[in-house]
Image (cartoon, rainbow, N blue to C red):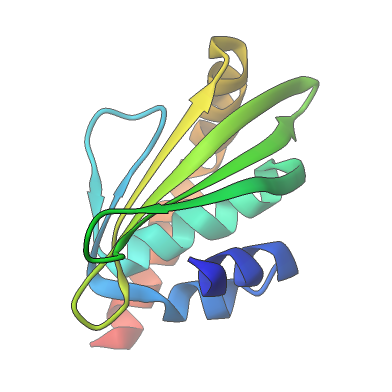
Length: 136
C-alpha cells in the first residue's frame, strides 16, 4: 500500500488518518483485544510514531486475488531494543484501510513496545475520545 507507506515514512499522520476507514479495526502486537474505529486507531498510530526510533520500511508485499491485502515489513528501535515488525493491511471496497494488524519480534522488542505504549495509553484514549467527539 504505497500511499500508507509514503505517509508513514514522511511522518504525515494526517495523511495516514485519511487512509483509514471509519470502521477500521486495529490489532495490536501486544494487546489481545482489537481496537475498532478510526479515532482510536489514529491515536495509537500517532503515539507509536513517537515511541519508535529509526523506523524504516524494508519490504512491501501484496497478495490476494483482489489486490486488497498488503504487508509492510519494518525495523525500528524502542529505547535500546531493536525490533522487526510487519503491518498487515486490508483495504475495503473504497480503497480505505479497514484492517490493520501489527506484529513485532523479538519478545524483548515487543515488551519494550508494550511498556512504552502502556505508559501513553491514558493520553491515547483521551485523544481518541476528543477525535470521536469532533467527528460527530
